[in-house]
Image 1 (cartoon, one colour):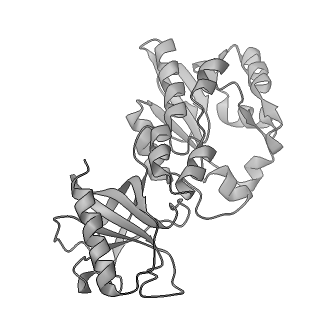
Image 2 (image 1 turned 90 degrees about the vertical axis):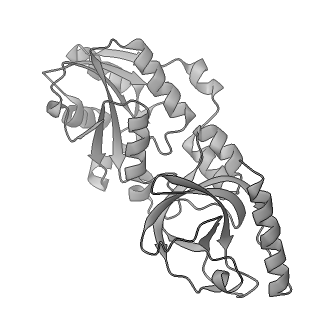
Length: 303
């Protein structure tokens, strides 16, 4: 997949174009991309148009929101066999454009034969006032092909990025993974913590990652760590370490099974499989150690 900033960068004549935020590249997105691929000929290239940053972050600044950061979305779209990724910088100025102004500025091309594919409920433009009718009119004026993907087929998937975000925030990563078609993950850098895990026999990797990316609810999770092409079983605690502190910031700490490498300053991906239990305060450190031992033994039995 090639990253582009204009359709004019594409030498291929025949293009299939779709547009959306594609946060998470979930099974609904995957369905759309697969459906397009099945409808086009081998000499037609698939172009996915999306925005960075996510429009919601620009129009209503927030943290703890994205299912995936931009670099991960790029990787996921590439895995979905997208040929070109047309990334448009999203700004407040862009948000004030009418649908026709946006289409004319970014999607007009005299050197390509374009087929537009959209979901039945697609909307865009200032205050989302424009929808598929605006694009259909735009396409007819330029002799572009235009197709709205089947409503029934899309609805049957019953999936959206918003629904997945809610599931992750609730800690139901198992159901979120079903809708993603893969395991939800965080990408980040390992930083030094307070060393309490090491003191009690369970050294943890403390992850620092973008505050724009969504964090599962507090609790203990079955997880896996991808580090330098190796996948390792792990247990991850998200929370405030209530046995030791009463007013701490939420941290993401992972005990990696059968792993003794020094990885401070390095990066890895942390995959979440399911929630094991809620975070709790133990009466003693020994009680905490016994519970962690049970958690680790339980993780060993899981694939």
